[in-house]
Image (cartoon, rainbow, N blue to C red; front, side, top):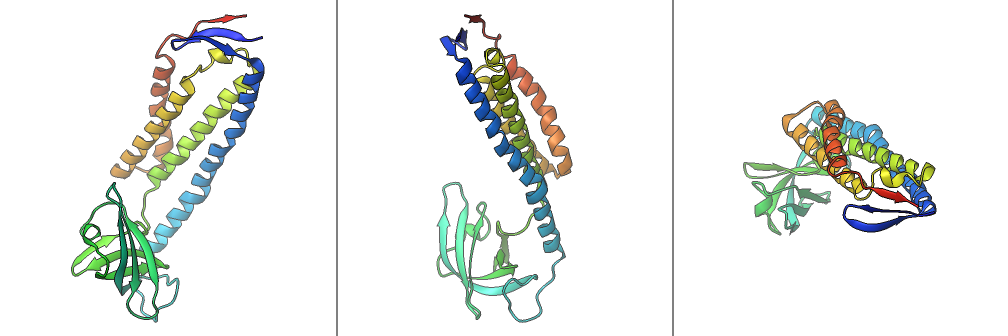
Length: 249
């Protein structure tokens, strides 16, 4: 039997128990995707990034012949093959070594810099390579790092993982309620509450991750801080307006 009510200014919304159960089951299944992403972030991505950064910090200058995948820093002469500029200021660059063995590297720069904004095809530069990555370029006394250089930035990674975990919890909770108690689900997070919750918690996670990176906050403070800041935001959203009055038929 359908449930009829009014929510958020919309008149006469029909709630079908069967449709609610189907959507609830889909939400429960969808919760597995962000949960898996959270697991990958905390158990694979963050540890591998930390190991790579530690290895990069401990590396030394190459002193032998050039070999593919050298685990050391080497400066090699290069010529710029192509530069692609994007609207947001980032740059993609392709460059090839000018001495044998000839290798071509593709890299990018997150924003304008002392060299990225002035690079053109045919420019002669000095590239710094590490493990087959072009981690920096230089021209004269001016140097600039590329986005391929390992960085110690676990705070944004932790923020992404935390948001994935919270999103999985939100989807699982809403899906379970709609699956188990379909005739009560209109009273539990009626539309557009779920969308607003997901977007708001995502915004909180992004801000905390950026602030944590800027202040060099310990990464393990990121998850509890996101939860702490998200709690009043969620409370505000859930109490933004009165709960819709529904007439059960």
